Image (tube, rainbow, N blue to C red; front, side, top):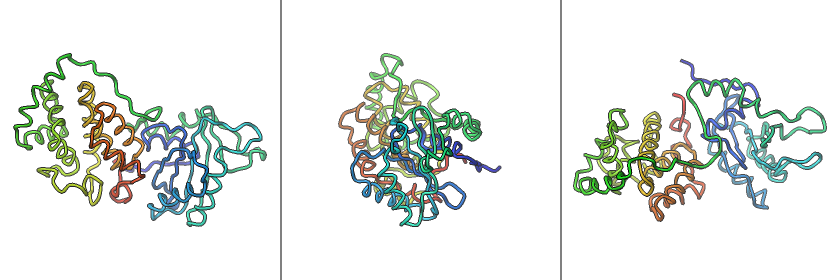
Length: 341
């Protein structure tokens, strides 16, 4: 089966972006590298608020250079600040700095678009020439590529951020988790690992008691850490010397298993009362970091800290992504995440 996605127009490219990010960006610069006629890596950053366009451009070029096969770059700018007639395009100085820096780096900006709340249009051509007028957003959402992505099972959040429904399960769930904890703390790590393995294989979490047991397992820090590791390395008995694995160095994940782990974590979040969700939110965030989805990762780390203030693992991971660190596994085209496999 050929899994290639055919992109034939700017609307197709703009339709592809939210699917690859997992959410519809706002106030963002989204860069896509080109490798000849094929799309390469996707990089989303917050729209710049600094007065240093050159510094912003240099930072973007450094990130883009991680794709060593890139031959050119595309840019989509998402903003609610639509320009008035006759006014300069938004972020004019930053765009000019980016154009110059990319040209110098040998990966020129091939095309760019502005996406506002009401329309999209080409960002580079002269609007007075009458060749790049505004286009309706429906041309993106109703396009063939978006329809194909949906047909393949892809979806995305309509806006960035992380939101989970408030807990509506049995009122005694928190008490049951606390009651299960002594048994979890007294057990070997292998017991919890077996429960997690069954859940990822689709043979676990069939009843409320198993769900409570798994939620309790994630409250035990050393067991939590090995459950994280077992998503990538199912045979690892503990989390000792797992630093490289946690930062995404030297690993070749089974991305289907990673997707299953994120889906299972969401199931467990729905079953967990507030105050017991932090490890699962952190797990989803960490796996998003490995995929190169730093924005999704940061949102989940923030949500974890809101659920359990001072949650150390989420704080450490948040510091990692806040520095702009991209997981090594996400920088290598041979190991990076591919959603449709």
